[in-house]
Length: 304
Ligand SMILES: [Zn+2]
Image (cartoon, rainbow, N blue to C red; front, side, top):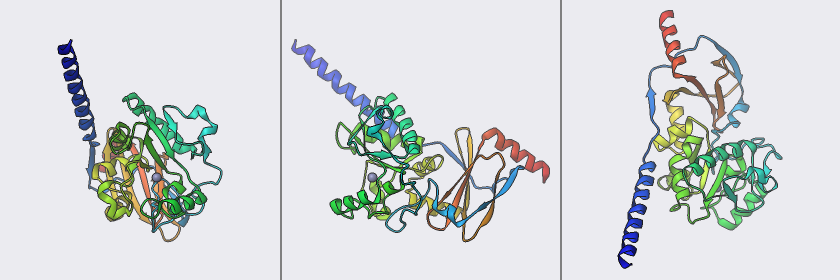
């Protein structure tokens, strides 16, 4: 009997070690991104669109921190929904309390990520904060102090693009939920906003629970390059334009300073996104399939 028990314990230890090994291995998977430095190839079907000062203050890449407040009108006042009133939308995770609100867009991206986590056997996710209005933020700032909370209007939670995600099994730093999100959230457009090694730049303590939505391909590039949002926006400003290939998609990401209404050329196909940086300009992200990109390059060569 004792022998069996010993064997069981041994198997358990090996099993645990092996799953830990697998988890560790997963943590190290970086996105495969191929960067090109050559100039962006002009597409044949491009149209000029007017970009105004207002564009600086809209979009998924807005920088919000102690220096840059949430711009007015970034979130419609009644846009965020109280999840406890819509239990049908709470799948694969639990709510810390009944007051948690999310914007519909963030709920959609979060749900996709939760589904993937559940499929990987990560089943104890808890949503502990979503959208907060300025009153709630002031209250939190009073309670938590400047190292853990930002002043009203300076928190990404006021912007409606951030989530605090916990685990019902323990602290995020050690829980499987925290490890999974840290390694995989970039695939769903999220970034760990306040990493341990970037406190000098973000000005915020390590928060293994706070995730910010920026969208693809930005989340993949930031993850691969180990950039926080402050660094990524500086990098784009410096580079002016980068081309990044991720899987079958080619992304052309360009920064434009905006000081007055400017015409920017975008593909007539409409496959582009514009986001302000909440400082001084906009980032235009054009996406194409790899085949389209090759056709484009060939056409440009024929024409030259
Ligand atoms: Zn947070």
